[in-house]
Length: 144
Image (cartoon, rainbow, N blue to C red; front, side, top):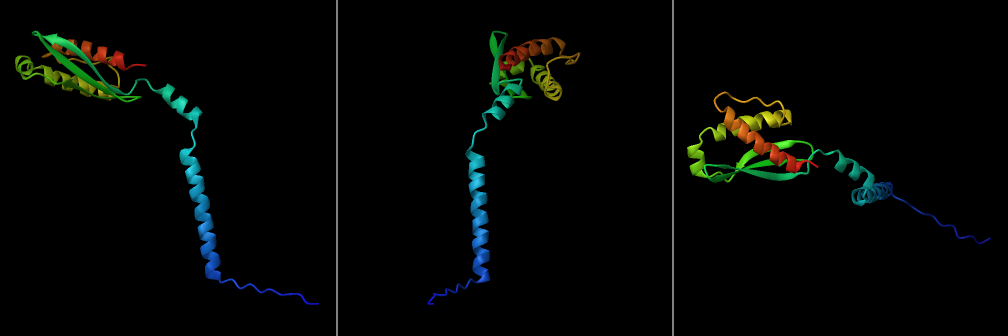
């Protein structure tokens, strides 16, 4: 009976290192699969839930023969900001209530996330009405 007996000697330290590397390899593989797999059903549900198409939308009005553009920045679900887009200095000097009125309207609209039920200051009621008309035009462009 000549059987060859084999004796294997394992060091505990090597076994632990091997087990750790195997677990890390499996975790890395699962992470890569999770990151690069596409789930189309989740993506279509989030795209449909947004109220706006994200971007910057402009609308213009004419004051004293000079065009004034208002830029409305929106994300999918909310209005981010409303600003003047390249406001000419002469228009700003001729109509000094434009900037404070737009700042007030912008704060209200961004807080309420709607152009409805916005209150106007008595000092700049007509200016605010003109600005609101232009803002509504830009928001209509942004809606899906």
